[in-house]
Length: 205
Image (tube, rainbow, N blue to C red; front, side):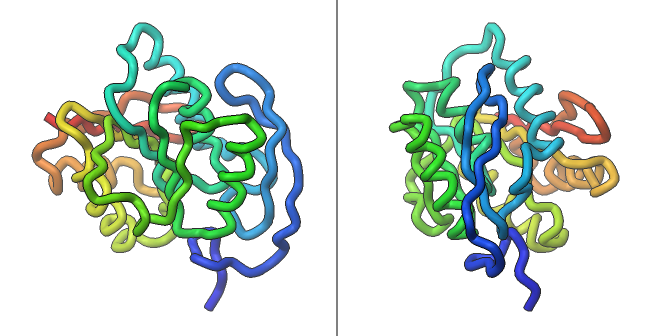
């Protein structure tokens, strides 16, 4: 079977390399490796999501509960959240064990003690999330993607929100429509469009 970044145990070059990315308003020197999503640089969709979240955070109230980065990869979304919300509990979740190892290494590099890296099965079922941020793994296929979101979107706390970035040519509009139809308790809107990506927000009533 072909190994992808969404494989549990990817094969290929596991040697760590350093890249510099800007997170939470400052340059950060972090580690990546082969076999994870976008190992050479900050993915454009992730960058769009982070810019949108930064704009939306101005004047916003502080987090009222845990935040989940779903499909964390080497960690940019979770790391940015942990830097921006030092008093909040941040969860970085990925099926890929190499990605989890890199996310943990990057959290240690940045001295982040509020970031928990976990496999999906290791997140306690009692945890509800005030926010979910994700550049979801669209390329796992529609059925698997829908199953993934059906597992995690119901774990939003009342009043919580999920913010997802999806390339328009990879089905952003259809995914937005599916979330709205599948989860009537969620109010779903597109809050940004940038460089061919849509940022979708789903708020739990």
